[in-house]
Each structure stands twice: as C-alpha cells, then as structure tokens.
Image (cartoon, rainbow, N blue to C red):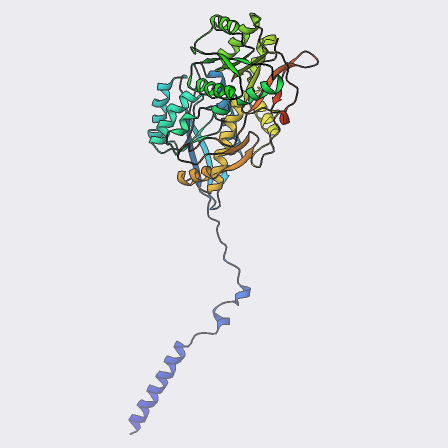
Length: 430
C-alpha cells in the first residue's frame, strides 16, 4: 500500500514538472516591449535600368545631306538631354535610357530598305525613327510594318505612306496635301487680281504629292494653272523651265522640291529677272542657308513646319526659345524646322513612354493613338482610322518670307497665317 502511495506521489510530481516546462516564459523575459524595439531596417530595392535601342538612317551623303543632318542633330539633342537628366522614370521605378544605332543611307531608297531590315533583325532596335524625305520614309515604313516596329516619321510629309493600311507608323509633319494650300490663300488675300499660276516642281514623291494637292486647291479657288511641269531631281539648269514660265504669262510660281534644286531655281529666276509677282518654294526658303543667295532670296516665300518666331505654348517639353538656345549651344548653328522636327520626334516618343508607363511597344503604340498635345513645334495628333492610320491631323504650317531689315540684313519673317504674322508680305516680288 505504501509502495502504491509512493509511486502515485512520484507520478504527480513528474506531471507537475512537465507542465511547468511547457508553460511559456513571461514576455518581459523573452524580449523588450514592442515599443522599445528598434524597427527593422528595410533595404530599398535597386531601380532597374533599361536601355531602349532606337534605330534610324541618316543621309550623311547624297542630295538630302543638309536637311537630314539637321534632323538627326535635333533628335540626338533630345536623346542626350534625356540620358544626361537620368532617363525616364516609370511608376515601378524602372529607369529608361536610350541608345542609337544609325547608318548612312546615302540618300538611296535601296539602301534604306537594306539598312532598316538590319536595324530590325540584327540590331534588334526597339523603336525606329524615319530617314529624311518622303521617298526614303516610304521604303522604311514597309520594313517597320513587316517587323512590327513602331516608327515615328519626321522629315516626311507625303500622305500616301499612311494610306497603305499600316499600323506602326506615325507622322510628325503636316501632310503634303496641306503643304502649299496656305500659300494659295496668302496670294489670294494679297492680290485678288492675280489669275495665272505656274507650278514647276521636282519629280519626287514628296514634291509631286504636294503640288498635285495644291493645284487642285488653286483651281478650286478660281486660278488658271497655265503651267504644271516637273523637273528631274538632278536638274541644275532651269533655263528651259524659266522660258516656259515667261511664255505662259504666269504671275505667280509655286513648286520646288528640296534645298539644292529650290535654291538654284530661285537664284536663276532672279538672275534672268523674270517678272513674276509671287514665288513660293518647298523646303529651301526656310533653311538658314537660303540667305546665302543674297538679293535672290528677297521676297521668296516658303512653307515651314516650324519657325523660332512661332510662339506656341507647349503643354509638354521646352518652349521654342529654350529649344533654340539648347540647339544653338550644342551645334553653333540656328535650328531649321528639320532640326525642330527631329527634336519633336524625340519628345513625342518620350511622352508616349510616359503615358504608357511602360516600354512595351504595344502600350507605346496605344499611347500614340491617344495622343493630343501641343509642343514647341505645334499641335500633335494622329489619325487612328483604318484608312489613314498615323497621318498627322493636328499640326499646321507657317509661311515665311525673306525680307531685309532696317540695316539691310536678310531675315525671315512669318507672313501667314495672318494671326501669326510678324511682318506684312513683301509684294510684288519684283
């Protein structure tokens, strides 16, 4: 009996010891109260840096060298500024920077197709910028669409490229169909008695599309188109065309093509003292180098995609003055509208990436489709219909004329539209 009682006491003691061992220790003995603990230090996640490759060609040689060079300088300035500022930061912390891959297209259409294929397949460019000129851009657009690469086109005004059913190509410039319409309006507002108009133009995709649209518009306005003739792009002697202008009795001449032919045409018209009242040429007059013609430049009018005098109030990017200052500081030359167009293409790309908050090409494309903004370059908005996807529908031209200031120095003045004019039009030409 005593043995049983003894065993029971031992078992009871063992149970009590086991319970004591399982009971948790007081919180004060385990750790300091929560309010006395130092917070755990969180290490910030390192931001991911992504470099997007932008591919394009430039006409480092050939007929488009001057305008193409300025376009590329404008785009490169934008890219350098973005990278120097630390890139574009997305909401998830991703930092987007840019690198360019570029080749000399030699102002040659065949080279363009070869090189844009290389950019898309070998260089794996994420995004594309067009070459300069409508003809070269049309060749590049085929490749951009084939490989599904978003391409911003600048220095290319032809409407036709955007009526091929493409979905990847977006135009910065005012379309060619609206390029010279303002010049016709200016002529009518200046001298309603003029009735005979001649069109003499370069046989190129861009120039032809411009003058065909302008001819139709001029005829709608009641003008008699007494001469409508194209010249070969390599033309340097315009004597036969000038004789036809004289014989036609034309009072106004519109046309031209690019810088070299346009400046030569204007000089020869002046040297032969052709008695026309109004001269409006494509591309050449807005270029700063046109002033090298001296007195032959006086009175010549040209449509411009942008001018430093044009005071647009941007809702994104720098003002016109800020762009001019940074461009001049970088390259020691006055920017032309080609320079501004290259820079504007970069701004549009930047805004699309910011709006998309992504580097996904499909999201960037959607942001471009939805874009409606004003830059220092002017308004930007794209057609999103299947019939003309990517065609620029927001931007409008300004028209400049070379005039002499009080000191006899040549200077550009905006003469149309009237609400943006900085001087009255010099009329008649001679």
